[in-house]
Image (tube, rainbow, N blue to C red; front, side, top):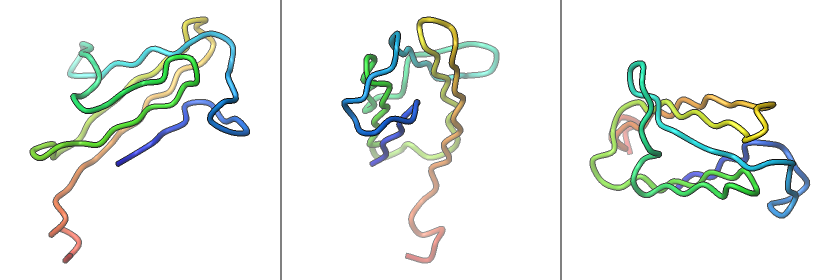
Length: 85
């Protein structure tokens, strides 16, 4: 399970101007955010609980609708046994 706050705030209810959009970057194009994820557009909080089979690297791009802020987040999901667990 992961939770990423795209813009720092005092708490989850601390809104920022505008709203957020998010995409998955694949090659030179964009796709919808991964299955199992949600984006709270108004608060700028991304949640994801990857299901079975989600191994590898994911590049996610978020931007506010006012065009003033942009975040690119790289997520790498590796099997648990890679840590010896």
